[in-house]
Amino acid sequence: MAHGDKSKQEKVVFVGDSRVRRGKGFITPPDYTAYPGKSEAFIPNFLLKEWMVGVVVLVGFLVLTISEPAPLGFPANPSASVIPMPDWYFLFLYQYLKYPYASGDFVVLGTLGIPTVAFGGLLLAPFLDRGKERRFYKRPIASALMFLSLISLVYLTNFAWTHYKHELEASGTEPEHIQREEKARENREKGLPTSSGTKQEEVAIVDKDDPAMEAYKTATCISCHAADLKGAGGPSLRGVGDKHDKDAILAIIKEGYNGKMPPMYDTAISNGLTDQDIDHLAEWLAKQKTEQ
Image (cartoon, rainbow, N blue to C red; front, side):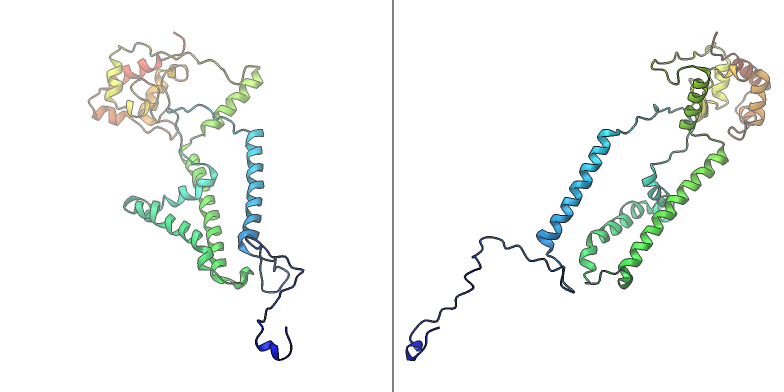
């Protein structure tokens, strides 16, 4: 600064440290992580780190999918008796949609309302919880919601899988992939190929013009075994004569089969069939063999 009487007439100029160069453009904020109660700048410091971690995870995931491609499952079999189940990471949603307040008259609430609130709250979490405290036990609301969500996911997933296993046991249903694996194991033990690349020859219907075909339809057998005997929720009857003779088929019609098929004798009689018709139907089904 100037001195003396002339100082009143002179312009005072404050000069900064000459060792600091004048910056141009955006100045990167300093890192305050070493100071208590402070944090680094969200943009670009924190965000850049998050992006870099995301890129590393994405590249690792892509490498995994390229090196270990997802295996193709068995061809779909619409005639197989199955209990539908989603993949494990959707089991909690599958179980949640079974509850009365998320299905039926409340299906809109279950499919749109509650998920919108849940994911909306997740998106708004950084704006709703703006406290500086990072220890979870000093953030009771956020921590309680987090633990509640985790407990709900684990419970619903476990309950869905346990209920599925009980349904398999109660219905006597064996998953098709397990049946195929057991069949492949048996073929390996016999020295046969575990799978065939060619399409197997279809078993034909024996005497499809026989009057027993009409009795078969009248007895409502088509509801489970289809009009073409290939099965529609129930097993295929093409080649059933290889497993059961006439007497065994009559017993199945009158008494049911192993808890999987209810007795159909009363239904057939109520629909107008006679004992002679049912006897002829069992005889006709016993003729359905693979080789004729």
